[in-house]
Amino acid sequence: MIEVDSLTKHFGTKTAVDHLSFSVNKGEVLGFLGPNGAGKSTTMRMITGFFPPTSGDAKVCGISIVDHPAEAKTKIGYLPESAPLYRDMTVIGFLRFCAAIRGLSGSAKKSAVERAIETCSLASVAAQSIDTLSKGYRHRTCLAQALLHDPEVLILDEPTDGLDPNQKHEVRQLIKRLGETKAILFSTHILEEVEAACTRAVIVDRGTIVADGTPAELLAQSGTGSLTDLFRTVTTRDTESA
Amino acid sequence: MSSLTIYKRELGSYFAQPTAYAIIVIFLLLSMGLAFTFGSFIKAGDASLEWSFFFWHPWVFMLLAPAVGMRLWADEQRNGTIELLGTFPLSTRSAIIGKFLAAATVWLVALACTFPIVVTVNYLGSPDNGVILSGYIGSFLVCCSFVAVTMFVSACTRDQVVCLLVSVFVCFLAVVIGYDPVARALDSLVTPPAADVMAATGLWAQVVRGWHQGLAQVVEVATSFGVWNHFASLNRGLFRLQDLVWFGSIILASLLGTSAILSAKRS
Image (cartoon, rainbow over the protein chains, first blue to last red):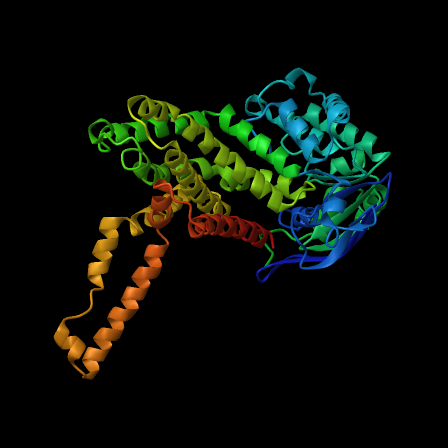
């Protein structure tokens, strides 16, 4: 469903992503791990069509994001890092707006918005202004936006960042549930999340993949049975890089 | 279609926040205040509104139009919502058009709110309402050009204050540069040198002459960027193709520039 082929992104002289290739199939939840600045968000922004890649291509459901961006974007639901929202809108107003942009109208729009509100448990705040919401609700509102058009591919940039333990658990359960029928790529810093929600994980460092496998394989690879140990051996600390 | 969705959201956002109301009220206070004080609306006894009312509009717009346009892209970039827009299946172009039209609509409402002055002149005298309509169209075009320029600046920065300052400055230049007293002052700067220099044949005289010719051209080009040439004729009820083309090109160039900046920023 997601095929990333030798994706590369340069910012000036800096290489953020260096010939990255991987794929995510239907029914698979791929955890995207790596230290800050490893190129996780940049990769996701390229797959979702926000950044044009310097070279390489990403195909979503077989459609190239470089050659047919508008068509490919209809297949993707995307939760950007830090969950940006139009804060002057109400939750339901925002979701209606997103649904309209996705080309939904009439009863299809209404039922899509209702379904997203239900999936993300937003019913109690639907009429509230986004400005007045707590972080957890804001995050879920942005996640709801990504689910509106029932996309085949979900790309979630740190979906559990800044949530409390209960909310983290709920989002993980949601990802797991959605992953049964979709292809999901999500990035995280929290290594337990890999075991809790992923069917497979890759670790990225300085724009390249340094480890790839199912959670069990990665644990075996670590030698000590701890993902943290593996993470620390295969990635560079920012204090020692450069 | 997606332009319409963006348009509705932006317009809703203007009127859901105090922005639009504040701008409209300040615009009405300023435009009416200036008409009744410096414009000597009552004393002039002129029902055409050309000097008493419309004359002040570019001056007011240069301050207020940037206030309407500054958030259009700066806000999206600061809040990160540009990432949502960029990953929705819609073209940057339709987002730009939707946003521009929403800001223009705020100004349409503001201008419409000045209707009492039209009613008043019709009650007090018998103006040519065609000329008044043309004055309104001129005003609206000036305003749309300023909004478009602001939108371009707004795409360049994520800081609304910087955007406001730069846009006000650019609009100020456009208003001042073609304004009669300023244009005359600039003209006098480039008056041809004294007759003896003109007659002289030495190298120095040639340099002075060349310098003045160059300067005169610069002034001419700069003055043609001012709004007055184009605004004044509409204000007198004169529809000239060149004015419409001028306003149209400023708006189009700004919108295309916005699109170019937004794509350049991502790559």
